[in-house]
Length: 161
Image (cartoon, helix red, strand yellow):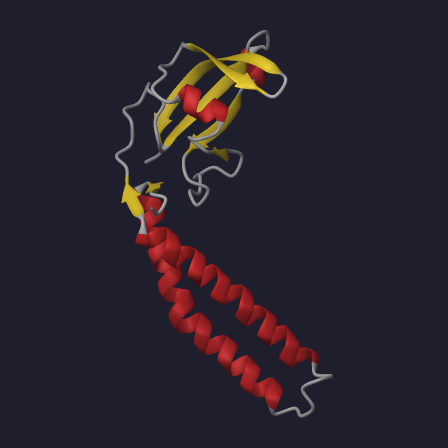
């Protein structure tokens, strides 16, 4: 059974646009680069040709990756502000730390892109991510980390618009 990829509507649209771009413009550009490099002669020692073929391989890998995600994508509705859910941007602080040491995360699929570059993506299936799902602002949440039980406080939870 295929893994369901839970995405926000924004991430789904971005992946669909990237897929379309790579399968149209991207493939045409790489094919042109390969053709121009072939015209230069001996392919064994032709750096441009090998670079274009490498680029083609990477691009085709990304196309397959996106295709796999889109085949099993499910759009999730964002959680209401104040509750941690898929698509939430949260601020948490570890027990014993000051609120000024807060860390911010977007709870979601690795393909989600936070609006703010200082926010990292946290998988909802990670130990901390799964423990946080459903928590409300002000809640203390415990989770099993490799070095034992840890507690974090949810300072804020806002839906990414």
